[in-house]
Image (cartoon, rainbow, N blue to C red; front, side, top):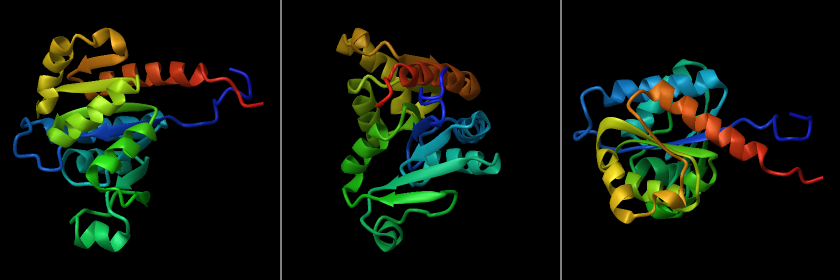
Length: 196
């Protein structure tokens, strides 16, 4: 890479998943922590919905490994984030308060990232997946974690749209999944021409 090829920019990896984890597999939260630690060790930045549940455990893993984390909140202010939405502030280095509610937050969350990884999800995770899919982003599906995440391969198949985004990777191993997704995201970054 030459000096002007974006090599100075760290990859931003969005991790999406359920805020409530009752339906997650027994090892989903351990996989979340492993994923967060792997993101930190890779030098990438974790981006999540500044929420509880699966994304929260990813942030715990990332911060435990010395990583940098950005949360995109549905709330307009820090006070609303805590008092109205009941969301945490810990394990985040930066929280961006959007004021756009969950669906607006989901759009910004996925678009602000170079790649998206989904694990143990519900309807919001499905929404974030479809935005990333439509945008052609690299999307990693952490399989065997529960919820809508385990339905995504069937959704892709019955939609007949796999060819519309060939950058979908499925793996039950968080570290292997991250490595594959980061390779795709890095290739995408390297293909962006320099401004000058």
